[in-house]
Amino acid sequence: MPEHSTPLPDTGTRPPEQGVRRRAVLAGAAATAAVAALAGPLSPAARAVAFGYGDDGSNYVVDTGASLVFKVSKANGDLTSLVYKGVEYQGYGGKNSHVESGLGASTVTVAQSGSTILISVTYGTLKLYYAARSGENNVYVWTNKADASVSATRYIVRVKAGLFLNDEPDSYTYAPTTIEASDVFAKADGQSRSKHFSKLRVIDYDYVGWSAGGVGLWMVRSNHEKASGGPFYRSLLRHQSADGGGLYEILHYGQNQTEAQRFGLQGPYVIALTDGGAPSPSLYHGSIDTSWADALGISGYVPANGRGRVAGVGITGRDTAYPYTVGLASPAAQYWGQARASDGYFSIAKVLPGTYALTVFKGELAVYTGSVTVAAGAITTLNSIAVPATSDPSNASAIWRINDWNGTPAGFKNAALMTYAHPSDSRAAPWTGNVVIGSGTETSAFPCYLWKDVNSGIVVHFRLTAAQAAAAHTLRIGVTTAYANGRPQVVVNDTWTSAVPSPPAQPDTRSLTNGSYRGNNHTFTYSVPASAWQTDPATYNTLRIHVASGSGTTSYLSAGTSVDAIDLLA
Image (cartoon, rainbow, N blue to C red; front, side):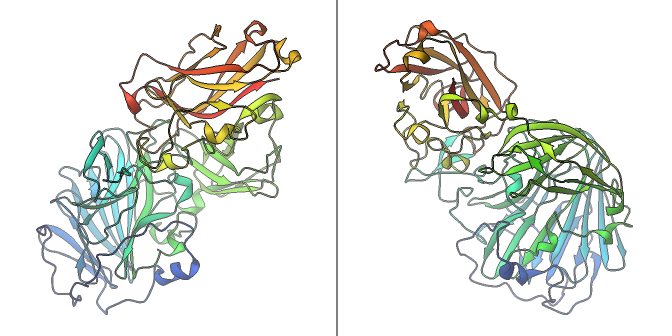
């Protein structure tokens, strides 16, 4: 593949390192401190050169004074070169690294303030910033999106082919057969691959990237305060193909969005290069100190003293079998924090001033909502939050229940696989098969997803006592999302059929086939009359669950839904 960067001036860089064609790894927030310590933001410089910037005619050229030299186009703000220890990492297929698929003609300026260099890019109402710090192998990036004139908000670091080959779920280097659209592929063994198959929710990671040949290339995510979708949102994070690789910071994307876009300054997110180890924890969104940027004039920038904190002394009424998360959301910003397992204490820092909806999640299921106002430079302390017993559907007395209510399909058949595989994947268990209450396998045998064209009409067998059969009961089916307005319609004993329920608001894009069950949790309820039940306690009742919809196409793109829990109330 030809190079597409302007040759660097002689800066004493080393010749390209060899032996980088190794299997890459995805390092998450659980990387050990020993590994992370390999690459602090102020790690010793690999070579002695001057920190500063130049102009090669087409680009501003920044030398960090460590091992990193990068270029930014003076025409459109693209990152056109990323050279680490003499090796070019940026670019594939003639494409650079940039916001979206690249901006048009932009105003690009550069300035140095002490040990910081800032490149500012203005494209209409959008502003993009790159910052370098003396002695660091990092590029700090901010995006200020003022309106919807740019369709989505992502930054993609395009990486040259062959440097970080891997065969992970989000790689399709070895998967030439297309399964769906132009972004889901199959290998010869039937395993699926797609850039969408990241496995991770936003709350699960601090950085993504690869390590091979003694070099780590990482995208350290921002706090996502201007993103949409909340803590449990899933989006593509990276990809590998024969053309090259991509690392993403995505704030609003055209897949599975449950919220409107938020506008304003987001960042920094950090492009970090290391000697193979994880990026320093001091770069993580929860601990990064950007006081050095306070006086740089970044549009929309709010320093630490212009932000507040929310602290809750505890949460009562929790089910200690589950993690609890507290989320803050307004049209302007979003934040979240984990509640302490012992008592539910939580703290959410670096919050922009304003009034927020406060939501307590059991797993991913909202069980409490309230409101909180945050002031600059202040701590808002909340008294103990009591989750009402009626807010957790698990507290309702049930004759039988399949799975537990936690806002996810976890525990159902194929649920774990579906965050990083297509439903047609050879590793998936059959999507059909009926369920018997009392078998001990009710949950593991029930498929996490139901489709009109795949497994609609799945049957649940159950017995009722004479007293139970003499009364009407409420049946509940909880879902986490739906595709093409798929929703459950039920038939009891082939004699009583429910009405077709109205579809709840859900994302209108693919979800079940590209690694995400996250939509809007919704509970369907059905009042089943006593006349529908079998009167003989020894006889099994049958519950058939069909998927109703007038939309969708065929197979796994027919109308479908993801299931949270099913129960028959006492």
